[in-house]
Length: 359
Image (tube, rainbow, N blue to C red; front, side):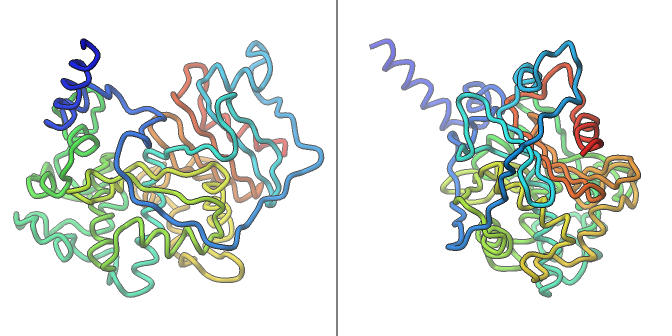
C-alpha cells in the first residue's frame, strides 16, 4: 500500500509542473531518453558501415597512473568511445552495460546539428539569410527590441535575451525549458537582457529559437526535417528520436535530446570532414561548413560548434555530461565519446587532441 501511495504522489508531482519533475528526476542523466515523449526519426533502407580494421589501435596517450586505457575511460564515467580515421574504426569501446546498438542521448551536441539544418534551410530558400530578424518567424516576440536580433546572433550565442543556464535551480529558465511541457508558452514570456551582438553568452534558448525558425520556415517538425535532410541521406543504421516537451506541447527540445547510436553520430562527423558532401552529393552547403570551422566573434565558438584553438582547426559538438563529437580535418579523424558524467581527472578537449596526434 505504501509503494502505491508513493507512486501516486510521484505521478501527481510529475504532472503538476516542471519543478515537480525536476525534483523527481533531479538532474539530467544518460537515461533521460527514456523519460520524455519523443518523435521517431526513421533510418533509410540503405546503410553505410564504417570498416573495421583487422588490427585496431591500442591508445596509449593517457596518464600512466590511470591503469589501462579502458580503466581510464571507466574512471571518468564513460559509456562508450570510438575513434575513426579514413572511414575505418581504429578503436571502439563500450561500458559492460552498453554496445554498438545502445541508445545514447546527445544533450547539447544536438545544438551543432540544428546549425546544419539552418544552413540547409537557407540553401533551399526557406530562410532568406542569417541577417533576417528572428521576429520574421517568431512574431509573438512583440517587444520591438526583438527585431534587432538576427538569426546569426542565435547561431553565435549573442542574442542578448534574458535566460539563465543554471542547471541546479528548479525555478530557473533552463529547468522550465528542459522539464516544462509547453515550450511555446515560455517563449512568449521572454525578455531582453542586453543588445544583441555584445559578446558570447551560452544559452540553450538561442538554439531552441533556431529550431522554431526551422519548423516555421519549412513547415515541418524539426525531427522530420532532420530525418529528411540529414538522417536518411547519411545512410544511418538505426532509427533515432528527438525528445519533445509533451504530447500536448508537441515541440522538439531543439537545444538537446537527440537520441541515437554512437556510430551513427560519427557519420555526421564524416559529413563535416567531407565539407558537407555524402556519396558525391552536397548535403550541407560547403560555405556553411566552413563557417562552422571559423570563429567570427568568440575564440572557441561559431555557428553552434565549439572550436579548439589549434592549427589543425579541430571542432566539436559537446553535451552537458561529456557527450562529444570531435572532428580533426588534418588527421581525417572523428571521435565520439558518450558519458554519464564528465569525469574528474580529464580534460576531454586536450585528450582528443592527444589521442589524434600520433595517428
